[in-house]
Image (cartoon, rainbow, N blue to C red):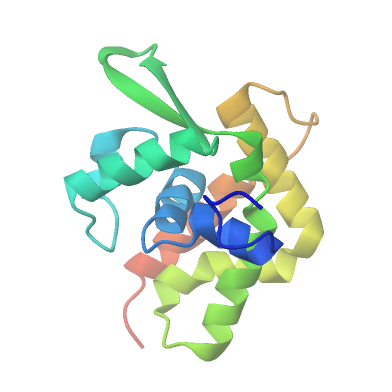
Length: 166
């Protein structure tokens, strides 16, 4: 075993990559919020990440092969962040983690709706979402006639967020 890792346990190795306080939240914001630029990740996260922490975690996620950055074709002075295939394959992990959190923790209805829909949609929805993310981030066309999972999740979130309390 390399001295760089505590052990060869797959859970340990996974946590060494995505187990810090911010990495999964950054991936979440790119994945579910379609936040593709540093400024959007910095200013639109519910948790309020500091710019130096965001820059550090993005560098680590890039080094680990979970995100890439490239010039934004729509804006010459901006860089657009994309998920890689290994990050896209975290969709089932995010769905199960969200479902667990909904059952055991004091979530808010607007922030829990995506987890609820992903849990109800199950593996078929997760696969469709991963296909959509591959199209958005990797340029791989998704199957024709496939509805947008991201649009559905976003619409449900916005509807809950705007709904009166109670």
